[in-house]
Length: 567
Image (cartoon, rainbow, N blue to C red; front, side, top):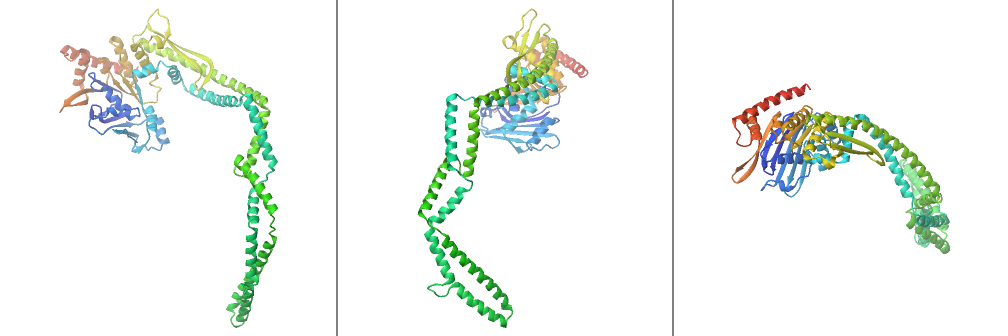
């Protein structure tokens, strides 16, 4: 339920705060007073497109804040999904737009995106106006109404259908992708054979490239390695210029420490460490000598290795960074080659799978159609009952639901609503013959029927009474009042019959002060309601008779509303 709507610098509104009631909230006022501005502000705060041109003159921004009380698990779950905290079932949405076009959106003090706000807005508010009436003429909207009116069986069956449908769609695309033309297939076949032959002839082994790179590095630097090993070995065994070799010097140190340990036992440990070091260095020297002698420099061997490495590098540039990548490419190429060589068999297999899956999709689509058909007929009957009470007793409406051969996300159903407003006229497509007033009544009938099934707590009617008057206006007023028993309703109207049903009545007017125009919104008390309903009935210069008539309308509206509660 919308508790409070606060608006700053929106069109002619400098600042207003409206505290809405549960039930039916009526907005009235002279043409051009700003009723549509109010709905524009509500649309802005639930994520609808808003032009910066409606920012009030000489202001840098416009801002709208809406406070909702929540009693809707669907909305709460949505907020939880986006980590938006809700305390005490209060939801506060704030949206500000600056003159530079910058948007700022907060939901319970959490900054968020316009995409999230739009999704949330669709769960909170259903704005129903002449544009929404036109949406009823679209087949997809009509199909959605049938699904909404049906029970959970439709939703459950639609999920079963979609499971098969998406598998069918994926397989259908796979078959289309595989049906390449003969020339492309032949070219691809030749290419794969050439690539497979090239890789196989190379006789690659895993790790071969790394081993080759290491060996090439050694052979290419064999002369340097030989000099370094000789120098190291000589320093260890012979010393520089035949003097003071590391091992001979260390041998003398061992002897000195061995003698020293005879006088001080503490030096025995040091002597042991040097003994171990001596033998380790001796072993290392032998390894250095053997390593140097093992280097067998051969220009022919180096050339052969470099040639092999060049061949591997060419393959790596084509098929992958490593030999493992190249061999993986080879395996995939062989699989693709096998597939192409068995092209006809594979296509036949896919077509057979698609045929079987098509039958499953068809079966689920038939099951969905049958449940929808029952819902369509029940909805048709309910609409006719409501139209009768809206002074269209001679009207006839038929919902035709037929299956076609095309599978879509919505099944295989085509819907068409046929309508005849008067006795003796042939049924024709709703899109072709319905008038604005008739469409308004059909739309209202649908809203009345579906009000108890909707999850949306707030329903807004924007001048849905266009083209309606007399007895029909009274019937329409009762329909809107009945909806307000299940949902909070905000209704802009020019009909006194609807205004009389209000649980809260707001009057919108324009005032001029200091050469500036302001839109003012006031909630009317009982006496002011009488005066406004009299004005709506008779014009500006209403009489005492008009006031008496307005008072009687309010009294009758009260009785009718009480009767609706027990209806």
